[in-house]
Length: 414
Image (cartoon, rainbow, N blue to C red; front, side, top):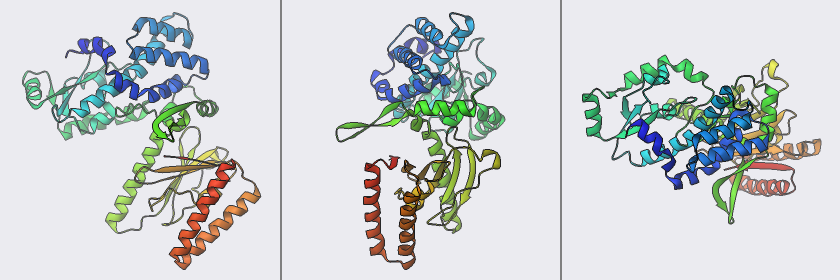
């Protein structure tokens, strides 16, 4: 299929796939461009969603331009096109990616293809015709549209078609060294990108949003507070009701996955070298996701990482690992969450499970209760009394549930 033919066929993208992705589409629309006014944001969301239903490009671009301000100026139209292309086309690309992955056994090669006109940027033009296996890690961060206003596509090929493309001079089969050289040459520019499209989902990374030009720390705090009030469905049904999460929590998903991968790498290296697998902890800015500190503890606990003096007043979220594989919030986690500047404490595992605790009550009485629980757990572990420890865990879960029911403790997780 020629690029122009694919462009004209985009409105016919599999409807069922787009419907499955609608919660993420909705979350992207809420977060797009950092717009603070919800009513505006809702209208932008609706315009992007109508594109998936076959809406008229120029009309939708005009509607978004009006919502973003600037009237019908060329600058407003360009900004609206960026919003529509970046978010709408990424939805199409994610749907196409899922279909291509599902047929990778029949079409094991993917070919990068540009629109081959004067608007193609140099970095994208360098990739025109590149053929790589469908499972190559290159596609994780360079499946189009991987940059603002990217119009490139990926075409799937079987082995015969891949050979014919190379023989006809219409493609170049890259090996691992060629791929790595290109990625190394562009690593700096890739790191500076304000967003990274992940084709296996429509996730947006909070840290990328925080890089947007002109945004201050206070802007990100206000943006985060707004996103805390907007909820999306997860597709998980519990007691006949779909579980929801806030858009802010959705934006933290890629951050959490990054640290889960770090925990997995640390664990694998420790086991390979015969070292103990200890808890790791990171302090992150609660509104931007910026890493502020890191610390390694023991197999059962880890202290609070040091925070630079220039970040002493920031609200922080602490992410730490539980090597045991359990994400049960411990008394130590809850006690640490009573700290003045601690927004929340989050436990993660290599398997991707997570629990986050946020204390609604942080007074001295609550701290004494939690300290007592912590001491009881420490004693039970030191005496190596498994029966006593199991009974203590049951009692702790019951107490946590009661405090949560009264609104004193907020616990979130998967």
